[in-house]
Length: 127
Image (cartoon, rainbow, N blue to C red; front, top):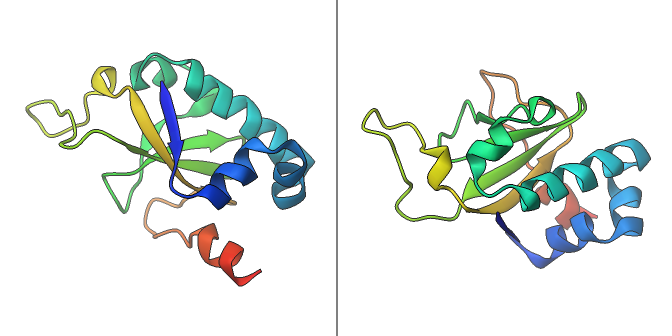
């Protein structure tokens, strides 16, 4: 699958081993590296949805975002790059047609079903 990032800072934090470990800690950095490799290796989102550890799901507060588990400590936020989104007649995303995603953020704690996440981008900009 084609993988891009919302900004250069996030791309560096995800792709540079030392920076990733510094920013997210050793354990989360290792899971993030593995999960990004799995996303990249998938032909489409349907492949990623078959990986139990990824726990691919829609964001509860924003149907355009997808969450991918990074263990129990964090979620990777993705957005399909297609415009318009490929959808089934019932409005759900057609995973097999999503072949490019944008990494939007890494949320340090899994998103609860009834809350909006606080994005790490604000923390990155503040530091």
